[in-house]
Image 1 (cartoon, rainbow, N blue to C red):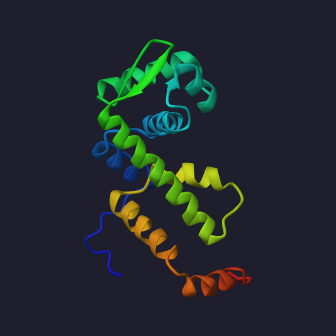
Image 2 (image 1 turned 180 degrees about the horizontal axis):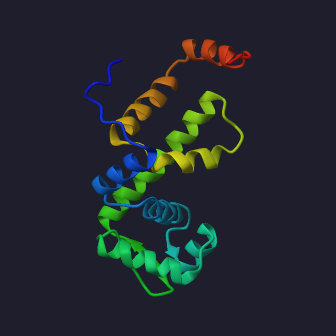
Amino acid sequence: MEFENEEFRTYRGYDLAYRREKSLTPSMEDYLEMIYRLYQQQGTARVSDLSRLLNVKPPSVTSMLQRLHEKGLVDYERYGNVFLTGQGKQVGAFLLKRHYMLEKFFYYLGVTQNLLENVERIEHNLTPEATRSLFYLVEYIEKPPGWFACFKSNLEKKIDW
């Protein structure tokens, strides 16, 4: 592996560069994902539901909904119903699919403790290329898994670092 053409940065440097390229913050993604989850589960989303499920105060929800509305992703009634636009539904569906894919990926790796925390910490930091590759890998793992049983048995062996 050669890194001659690679520009090294600190984690924060990569994060700042990635955020400039990306139009949604991790918080925006969390809100859209939760709104989409609520749509799937109960057909509607409300400010009060988001406040409770995301553990934030209603004014914070309203503030975020204003930002998402400016990006054309949601419409909302102040302290009332939240509606995803067509683009908001597409983004929300992708975010939830990405979340489930990462849950499966960690499960297949044998990660059981703090699974949700691991997914939440990683999902917002993947590049599109890494996300696409992980989707393909999880899809491959789920095909008839002759090789995966061998991988799992080796995973359980103790490794001395």
